[in-house]
Figure 1: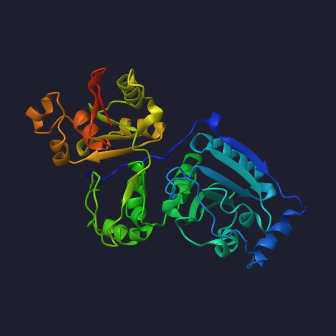
Figure 2: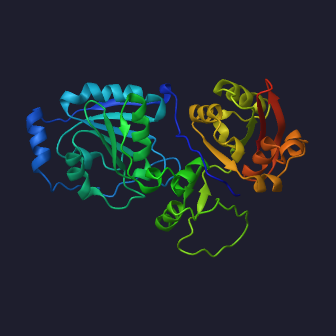
Figure 3: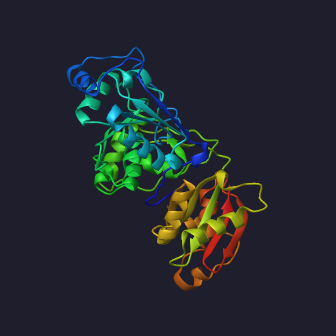
Length: 362
């Protein structure tokens, strides 16, 4: 499968499914004592260093569990953050700061959010870091939520959390090169495709290629097959090959509510629901539709855009006027077929309110 620039949205869960708890240390320690301990103790290590990010895609591109570490006087801010992000994460737990809190919970969360000075979080987590593909991501924010600063694991959940904090007023201070340049790294492309990176070491080279505009569309290889790849080839593997793809076209200005209604209508009677959607597929000429991006964001799935040449290879059975008018094949069916794991069309295109056209692929 080949894709063009890929727009991603973060996975989310409903507030009812989100675990919200608070953990406080057993020992009594005053706020000044805690801050001084953090400033003076640079050598704390944990026997459980290394950790493991238990994200859905197994390689840490998406953060689903969040540990908020805060001093006692910042616990109210921590609760505000927890409540504000409840819809975005499966589990959010508040941990009151003590000298070994990061070490104690290392590996239990996909990402830590420290409501503290960056220096404290850096000193306390640096001895625990082992491998970016396994380590929890770390983000810090000031008490006023002015800044959200990813420290480690930018492509593995930290940028995601910082971006989510923007909804609470914080400015994401993202420093990973591809995002700073306004481009999508391969981890972000994997996230949009509901896939994960198999060979993490390759992403240094491929993300440099992204920066230099030298990395082309993601190429698809259908198996069974054997392939020899150089070390600078990033391999992505689908998380859920049984999921469905919503091929979607629309008129300009269609709103998120219309997209949602069209998707639900297309899935009606198929045995699938919106929870079974791997991603939304469209053509590059529709990839910036605000309503489409908003609807996908609310659903918690990525948006993958296919180039015209790809859609022509997977043209659907239903004639489209766009081919006569502008030379493009119908977007809905072609993108559904191109994106489906089996290149099969489950539901032919349906038009909703003369605004959104949807086909279902698998």
